[in-house]
Length: 396
Image 1 (cartoon, helix red, strand yellow):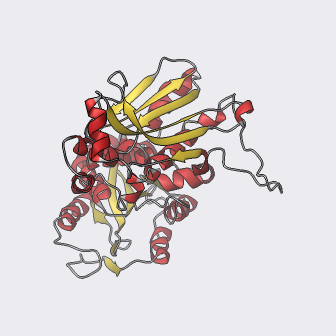
Image 2 (tube, rainbow, N blue to C red):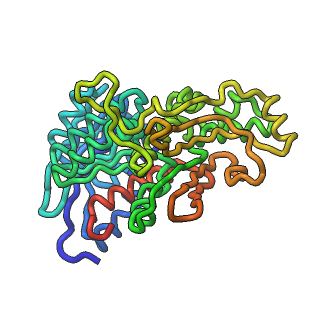
Image 3 (cartoon, rainbow, N blue to C red):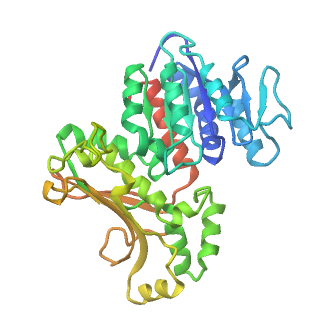
């Protein structure tokens, strides 16, 4: 247990959808324990939503106040654009531009008290093509000397190495546990449980997209694809644009994130940082979306689902990647595809929002991490765990 006076930590939430609202509730629930056991007091510098923002830089908001705001926004009783009640000392911003959001980050206290660092927690819609503008917000925070916690896959896929280097340069952390499998501790388990023993990842395979699992499970019960998709959306599981889920792109981005973060591309059997065909000293990313063969579930019909069930199988969207040898071109390859799973398959037992991934290494028998019944609070927990790792590095 820490001793001394509590240190005040200033947080900015970038995105105030279901995930960061759940995080706000969790922080409020943990506030007393954080202050008593860890001598940390969380206040909010700003809360940024899609159509409005509260800039509390002059009068920081308490954890309890933002948890109450989260409930009010979820109930449709409050907005952050100034059209509903705004606390004294707080500036409401309607339709915040990227420039306005960057300005809010630029005003964050670098170190409000000795030993404390401010942090942003980013959970906005994923941009598959470039990871923006999330990567810019993360970059701004790190450059200012603030930690950055993100539930966003885009920056991991397109900017991870650069963001980690920037964080190291400024003595802060960039953490992204919630980017894959809703906060299940995949990355931290790999770092703490596999790497110390020198294990190297040869391949991985899993069901990484909860939305498609919900859809296919619903179709097994007789629902249409659209009916099953609505079930996923009502549960807050589906991406804002469900096309990313049904096309397989969401799973493909997760494949790249896992391959990069777990160093699949650094296997001794693969080359690293291969020159681009155009020469000139530029380098390809060690693993990219172009290395993943992607097909989704759009073409799956009720008849195909019924046929699989009649044969004792289940259709699921399966994703994975495998390290390649120099003879195969020196690059790892990934895939996202619908597979008819046999009862003997470790993924066969997954239903609804379940997800799983199996690691195949050079040291251990296959290890499977499985999640049953994903809910939005799982993703928020991953963010919270990352926040605690950043704020309490000695104990993490």
